[in-house]
Length: 287
Image 1 (tube, rainbow, N blue to C red):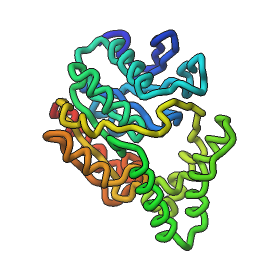
Image 2: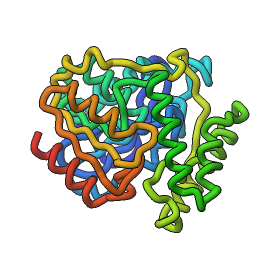
Image 3: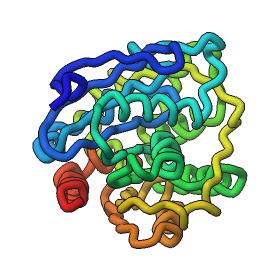
Image 4: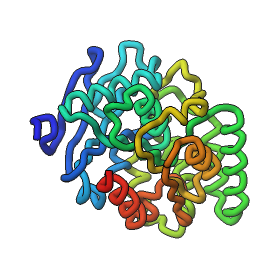
């Protein structure tokens, strides 16, 4: 084991910017990229899964203790995140790793597998999509409206939807407040286990990052080029990266495995942790 894989916090420099990552667990190496863009990485911690693999959690550039770009808050492209992810893989000193990308982190993972197939031992696409754009945005809005109708007795759900579309002041604090108000929409049934989610709601933090990508991402035409073993994970009630988009990934990537979590929204690792851990541990340890 190299010193870059010892347990604990590590710092490297990529393109002159500090990149922080954390290592824990034991077994096959999996690098985790959280969502957002601009969400603190800690929500993605998976202690049960760490019993089956060596987890390397990135603090995405522009968040937490990782550095800011000179043009902050602008310049946070998918390509930039891929370069930082590759910098960590290089620093680990191993031939290839499993790459786990959640939500926006899944965009980064997809692009990484396309750009660096020789370094991708396996690909876990978690609550994500190969495409964002007008059709994706319309699906997101329809799914949110359906959730508001399903939880018509909970005015907080309408408030969560409105928080996602109302906009906010261009500060980290305002972005964080928006995330906290919108959080119920990300669960299949937030109020059934509200006390369980309150610590996450209080701890979640957002960092204002912007990019010329303008919310548009599309690698659908290149899915057939992905050679890595691939596991696709989606929650049945995920409004933002719904089963529709997981199905598109499944059809496009040869040999990909698809697991749908019936009782989850955007966070199956929190909502159905045992089933989630089984699915990912089985995939990674079989590779």
